[in-house]
Image (cartoon, rainbow, N blue to C red; front, side, top):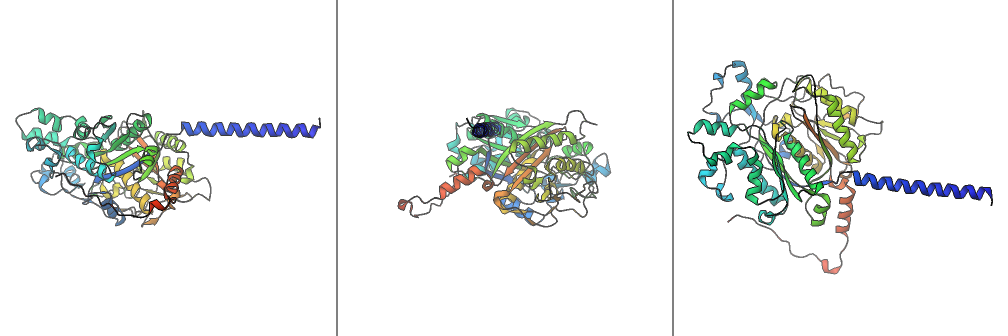
Length: 493
């Protein structure tokens, strides 16, 4: 046999073996990669008169700061000057507040007045947001009754329990279910809507709501539920929680969160509530659900032992971000927005930036700019609702193709070295990548050391969504001629 022919055949067999091995590796990587999760809808009540995601985006696009002095009827009987530390009393008088925590249409949910009075406003506002989220997803609440729909809610302080106990002589069962147990904040949603999936309140301090989103994604991927409501709530109804927060963490004297700024001097509290509705991407596509964004990968970890219980670990933050980036299947240069935890403390922000730089830093001059920001400058720190507020900001940016101005930023913190890096901080509204290239990362870190991170994509950046939309847009024949348009109208009675 000709020696050249033998060599050619050997090379062909080797090439075929390499192709086969590559195919098996690709298949294995696909199986190991977490299934994408679709964000089907979202809802919120946030400072600055924000009643829905559209209001929220308007606030961000206009560069508004929603933090204001604590005024209004719920504070009328509180003597801040009577606190034991006059200097601290001054710090306690600012927060990002939602407009109305007392208003609640109890009859809409079939709840009597006596029970409603003892119902924690955190339960009330989440009931309203959950209903709105289901409507925005195109679902009727009654159709979900008995289904494997999960509820995962980040919660923290129980201010209403303290005020209820102070104002009442009797402690009955309705106080226990209305305000006594944090678990009921999630369980109430499952009960009212008849949902039979997992139902849990999550408390990892400031990272609670993004950890709740992560747990919901895990439950969806494992088959523990088919739909999920996930998010968080934080209402400031008593000065005691502010006193506790201010003893543990620095509060900004001027009531302004100056995230990433040279003059950053502490956090400002904020309140609000927000939820996202999640489904496995394959199910959302099959059922024609709206898709606001796609979570490609998510994870949590813990700082472990650091210089102190509340001291962050840059090593743990970096490890978490790298793990999520690897699981997403993206390269570092493809992520062009990072919504940071960014509380506005002079040391915490640079520590976080170093972790971001280590993971998402450029790999070459061709990498596009990556924009950094923190919505806490607009809203204050929403604590147990902070992470989901960051996620919904990113969903708005994905939709609009714009990156909102980072407010309260005169000069960048000198320990955040941007020169020579691919990172920038928007000083005005900036255009973003084309839809098929929009990928963002979101971080949320608990002050006890529990961290959460995820990567979310514009739907058009996900091949499965693009393929589905191309197929749906294909001509379907003469019988698909345009016809009447259905305008749905919904009311409880």
